[in-house]
Image 1 (cartoon, one colour):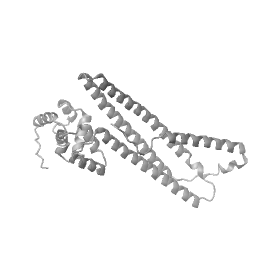
Image 2 (image 1 turned 90 degrees about the horizontal axis):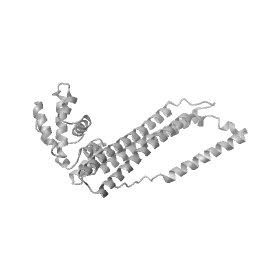
Image 3 (image 1 turned 120 degrees about the vertical axis):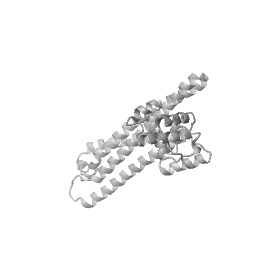
Image 4 (image 1 turned 90 degrees about the vertical axis):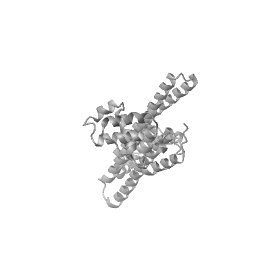
Length: 289
């Protein structure tokens, strides 16, 4: 698509931005294009933030619009999409992004909820891949130790701990992204609730929105708890991984009471893990609007 050359006259750009503010979808791209133009050419003379205040666009919104321009091609098919939806599409991996663009071009506009779920699933897969790489590193490290270690020693396994650190970082990033997405969804919902109250929406509709808000709040609290729990488990694994390469457990052969006590601890741990796994949702979660 041919693009019109943008003016370097700041007042003209302000007029164009205010015009496009009144039109949905496509205007997000057009406003973002002009914001990039102002910043890249320093038309605000080092005071880009103050200039944003003048045109009544906050920094977070401006960043999203500017990112959308850089990540998505210009298209009139975006007309019915809002800022949150376009920002979610822009931050997807290239293959997933292209799928959504083709879907929109075919007249099937994804909802914000659908896009958030796609992004969560992508983050989950990234964390899972990091975990699998960690496990592969553990297995490889164990084989190397088995072949090379003749006398008892704790292996100096840099690669294992490096892969474990990377896996933990992947898990932390996953939960961080999940938390940010849920909080963004909560903010959008609060805006809708406020708007509906101002428009005297029926009590039943408002109650549905309040119930959805309560559910989101519960999800955020649960996510925080589970994130801390998983981080603790990963740290435990890292701190205690090397003990499996020593003879400490073998040396218990003469201490029957301690062996039985340890086995009892392991049995209770296994039962606890089985109980938790039994209440976890399966991998094919279907989430409605």
